[in-house]
Length: 74
Image 1 (cartoon, rainbow, N blue to C red):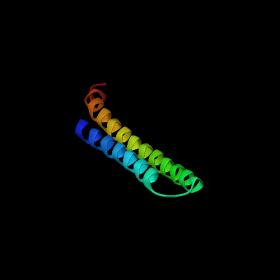
Image 2: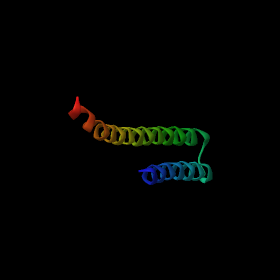
Image 3: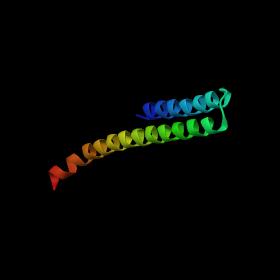
Image 4: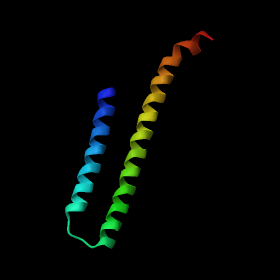
């Protein structure tokens, strides 16, 4: 589980760094650059929310599995 989370975190960070470098190295006007940065930040934010929701669902499933034996006793 920890390896998967680390991989996903690394992939997101790599995409973020790569995106920033690509935007900064590409020749474009200031207005275009601001628009690209805004679009990319929205996309990254959405990606982070998706990954967080998936991780939360995974942890909730694990918690339910761990609680299951105690529900049978009570």
